[in-house]
Length: 456
Image 1 (cartoon, helix red, strand yellow):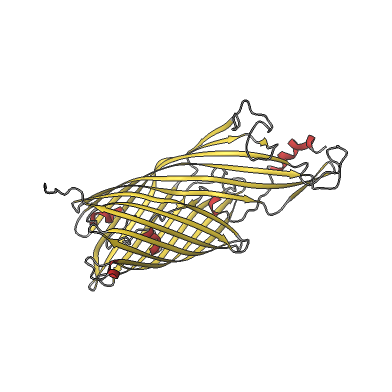
Image 2 (spheres, rainbow, N blue to C red):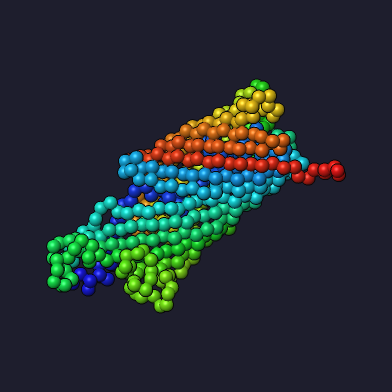
């Protein structure tokens, strides 16, 4: 009796509620990666103020005109999120940034960089069982969510010096990528001690389990534009004060191509669509033969602005503060981007940092080191839409973090090896505490360009 009702039961579990743990990379487009290099992470900042070398930030192109050499920079990092209550963890790691910067005669600079914009990697399951009673049968339902992928950022920057005290820059970001989302539904007869399949034997645990899998794939692309402005016109006594500001907005609409594949019964319970499943595929293709295709242009509309201050306490010691606000202006009333139907609507960051830069001409080995430290707070606001854009529940989670970092300068062209570490405590509105470790290592190599070398 149980197998004959499986399609009717499947329609019921499509509306079942799923509660998940450690789901930050499953919200919206995933975990945002807005700090890409070790010097930024070591300062606990967003990279607006100088932190790589004195007067220079790898993340702020308006500061690149102060670079004495061309640089190639590679950064690798990892992020670990530990659920202290439920003893679960999520780990993301990989290339955080590849960057080439070319200053031109101290007046202009151009740069190309590649870095992740967001990342998804999660495997979640319901921590409770939904029980339905259908025609004298007790049916247990469980749900599982899996996903992976992300969005990459290829950027091109132009900067120029307007005067001795003012500099500006434009950055163009091409965002592209893809993600795969999978929802699995499992149902069984509850091991009620009966012979539900009429084979003459009492059913064993798992004998009549039925599993359905529903797959989606998203392909992303869009273009952003950013503007930067820096000024050190103001002095406080003999101390120079640098003020920087930036904005980021959509240049070309962010498009999402969504492919929704029809659900199938995973008969052999291997998690893939193959010849043993129902409906049976034609040939040896492991992908369902048909899909519903949609294209959306207003599911993701990012916008960001930042402002920062840098006060030179001495020739080497700098105190900094930055305030940044990132927001998604879209109405995320559907679950195309997220299986959980959550939208990250805005994100605020504030930090205070202290940096001691290396000496230009070090006399001792320790004078070749940059020391960075900072304290920062972040707040994330989420919306979970129920039926339409006016019916939603709002949640938030907060970060409090400590940052430390060191940079080792070496070579005639001021090459640099950087390390950055963030230790973060995260708490959310359902009282789940997380501990996050964010580590990054970067290597930057300099060379001389546009200089006429003497013939040997």
